[in-house]
Image (cartoon, rainbow, N blue to C red; front, side):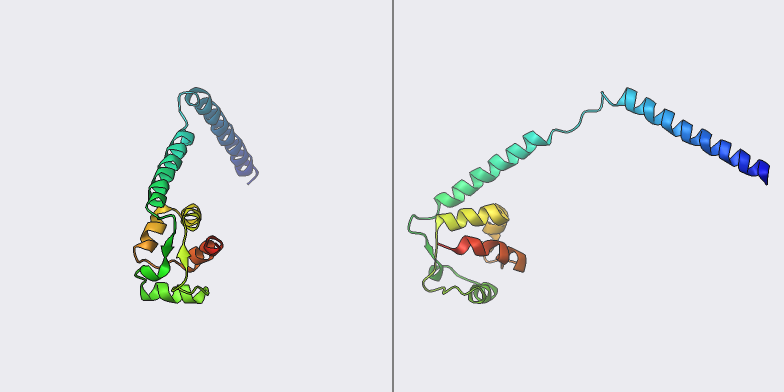
Length: 133
């Protein structure tokens, strides 16, 4: 039994040493040649694209805003509007509100919601601060 434990201990130490040596060699010789992806440029490009899309959406909104009464709301959207305490007959969506919404949930979701999709509970919570004139 003693020989088995001694042999196992030596084998374990040898395996650990081999792993450390291989790790050192791989990191030394392979490290500099591996290029890390640059997310800064791609992130900046995405932000620029989002800003361009947002500005084109905002340019479509008249200065007087969009009266909610003129929009065709789905039944689910009507429920959400009434739940948050908005009167659809007198409420007006301004450019500032739309810009805030794009900032909070993104251009794609704002486009989907204005197209008739209903916001989720989380999106509704995120958009509530945007609805203050």
